[in-house]
Image (cartoon, rainbow over all chains, first blue to last red; front, side):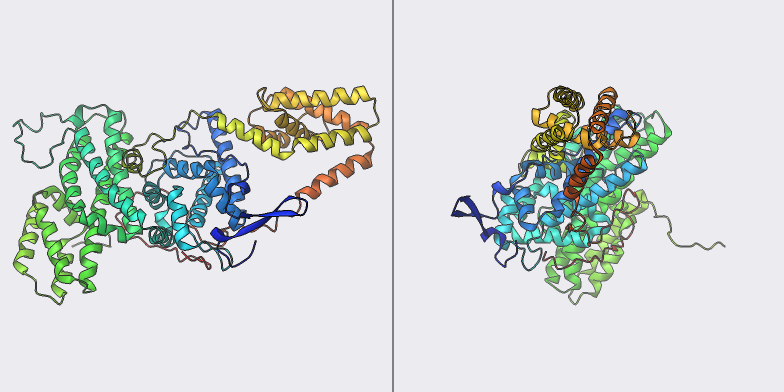
Length: 419
Length: 202
């Protein structure tokens, strides 16, 4: 089917009886083929269970074949299938939900199954790329505004799916992913509203994590009973090991997902910045991360490897949460200052932001070890505007003090000289 | 792994921005069974089973009752392989598939290659049913003159031709399949995805 008419306006002549034809939209349920796409299931936990593994492998094989089939469909047929076949979008949704993330602990799959899973991973990305493309070629395209409505009204994309896409594919495919997401947000501004209304949910997640850890009051204003710290067992120390592991994994996933999304799609940083997100994240970090680190030291684990795993996940949580802060600060304050776009307001923003976080001393110490405030300061001082250096120095002093008390230098990455 | 706590799981559950808050996983094993039936049906639809039966009746040098019994037995084996709850179309499709699979077999036992093909389409199956089907098909083929068997083989081959020229979306797009690395978050990321983006207007 080749014409310059957009798919949403394209009509196809169909013979309904002898000498009688009627026009049917090219984008119509009647063109859907019965495929019955299977839902994706996460890899089995026990590779020793041959039956379970074989069944999972069979599922993967069908998914692979069906995705190849869908990607080979002509433009119009692909869109009919994705819009009108619920099983297709359910497959995509289930993959984005349950596919192992780069930060997940993976079981060792047999080589042939691993290679099939990699292929499904690629095919899924291409399917999402095709879904995010309104103009596949000169002949095959959809009117941009209609394209935006199709995506939104049929839930082809939603905010959680976009976050999942970034965490699954951001590493190594970020440029293409950026274009995809930008195209989705550009053609359907409602996604911006949705992202905006997602932020309170994420902040609620922060509250839930604190509550789960018995650290619900993050303000530090409530007086605490004085006990010897070494004798005190926090809620993190008394909860079941499975619950404790969930807290650590949840923190790591939250940090990684947000960091990947904001890294791939920096325009979203502005929405987070407006909602005082960085300050709230610093409060979460301050109250939960040191407790988690201390609990890992104190708790008794079944095996050393389990302890190491949780330490590694905590490290991931720390790095990624700090990266989220850096990305927001960099996109919303540093870059505009460098580009001299509303620089005075952005400087004020930055100073206000760091001033609001001066109580979160452990957070500041860790942040300093990953992203030095001095580097931000250097940029600020080069800006062609007047800056109250005293205020900057005040922040720098507070961070240095926090770092002296709680900080740890990063290991040098280059060669070191002795003597 | 499907129970791992995820931020996006919480957003799906509490933000009201997704189509459905939660899909149950692990409890719908039957979708795999249904899919197998559907694929078996498509491999060879009921029309082609009927055509196959007609052709066999025409070509085979054996009594009508023997042919009828053999085809009935083959159909019975197919039912054992696809499952008792499968529809008639699925069973007939599977029977036609079995005929196609075993018509060139040289022994009454199922080879590992044939067993793999069966398992790929039908999932786990009773080996006795497959062996019996193999023996029945060999018996039917032995009743046929050689040129008739050859003709049927060519017809099936022609149907499968023409697939190589199909173009697939994304086949020229560079994709990086990087997996787990805990270091990447803290290190500076080098995005080596200067992809060949073709003329996609994103």
